[in-house]
Length: 308
Length: 250
Ligand SMILES: Cc1cc2nc3c(=O)[nH]c(=O)nc-3n(C[C@H](O)[C@H](O)[C@H](O)COP(=O)(O)OP(=O)(O)OC[C@H]3O[C@@H](n4cnc5c(N)ncnc54)[C@H](O)[C@@H]3O)c2cc1C
Ligand SMILES: Nc1ncnc2c1ncn2[C@@H]1O[C@H](COP(=O)(O)O)[C@@H](O)[C@H]1O
Image (cartoon, rainbow over all chains, first blue to last red; front, side):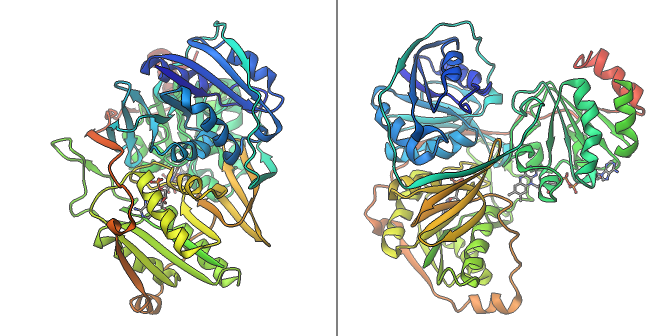
């Protein structure tokens, strides 16, 4: 069997989640090809060729893939699809955007956000914000799948795959990139961090998120947020953790001033250790926290920073 | 210009669903149902486009059994002009939903189709993208801003790194994210008025599409439950536990 895995990257760095998606491909079993579609993305190609378990790296380095527009990337994957039984991408915003387009062009449905592989055609995925776990069999001839990275352990990176450059440019000419407004941060990616500290509505305003900085510095943590904190404009959208935001499963997750709505829990309840800081002893977050502390965050955070 | 808004009837977002004891599916008997929150945002956006004079007609469409008429009436009360129910008792795969919607797009010729980015029951996040593929139209998914300018629509998208703006030739497909707008509440007079707005019912079998299932649900199980842990009294105790018991910090 042959499996095509889409490499998730920003033209300079291969995202750590790709290593977990390759692990999902290994669980299916078969010859794994990694596709790097981008522009001026040689450093990604170098990293991709070292991913263990990958036999070949296909490179489509072309201006039409610079922003990985769904209209263009889906046509590229469609051209390659004939050689593969499984086509897999990480369930991050790029994969979520173009993969269903690939599926429909191939006249198959997509199996979204899998967290485990039972066999080459049976997969496990959370539904209803993770309040139920479905085991689903794909009846389609080709399987188009997105992978929730937190379900798999990353493969190593001391491999040496063959690199093949493709001479393809697919431009649908119906969409174009206008601009990006990306959040600059020195901190690790939410999806890759071993420690995540998130603030909720209880933080009261964006300025108060600085109270999390010192702790994040000491722990090498990424900073996240609840939907309420993002909606209120305290922090940018890409910090939202939850059912409809980012899914994280770090060794340590610290929820500060977050009540623990099911949609928030859906994005973090697979963390190894959960700490909750909340002044309301009845807050549902305490039902999933390994260690809870009933306290005012404005007292607790400075003290915690001092004692780490 | 016409705007088409596909909406889905789903479990109310406040309800924590339970799995049936025989693991065949989740138990939706006597559970509160509602319009999918992302679809509500889609209806609101379409209605605002109409109020701004950009759109001339807003059409809501839902695929499901008779009970989804309730959500179509909600969409009408929120400002949609008319509704279409595509009747089926099956729980169709996204590809089949997209194929039915493709037929509606061919018939109605909307300039914009606004869907939710995700249905909060299946958590699939794929129907809009599939509809875009089938119709050959461009897509602006996870939208937090939609601006129609001439024959193009600029869509600002919520992506992993922040925001991305793309320009799409119209007709185009848009899927909504949470911060696109804040939906209004339907007023009582508008709820009354909605009862008289047109709602057409068409059997799914009339569309001449092979709607055979693409997936088989093998089983549904409850998630692994987490044990509630302990409440610590002081920050010192917390730090000590994290270091020596959980061993997640050093
Ligand atoms: C379709 C849909 C999708 C959604 N997706 C997501 C998602 O992806 N992620 C997400 O997070 N939410 C999501 N939500 C929203 C979710 O339902 C909740 O509304 C949200 O998570 C609440 O955020 P919060 O806990 O910060 O705010 P609140 O529920 O208001 O909780 C604030 C908490 O802070 C505590 N607090 C206040 N002041 C202090 C203080 N000084 N010290 C200590 N504690 C304090 C309070 O006791 C309270 O528990 C979604 C909702 C819908 C409908
Ligand atoms: N049965 C349905 N009827 C109408 N629209 C639907 C239906 N199912 C999904 N949709 C639309 O597709 C969006 C995404 O759903 P999904 O891809 O299932 O997560 C929803 O927000 C709706 O706009």
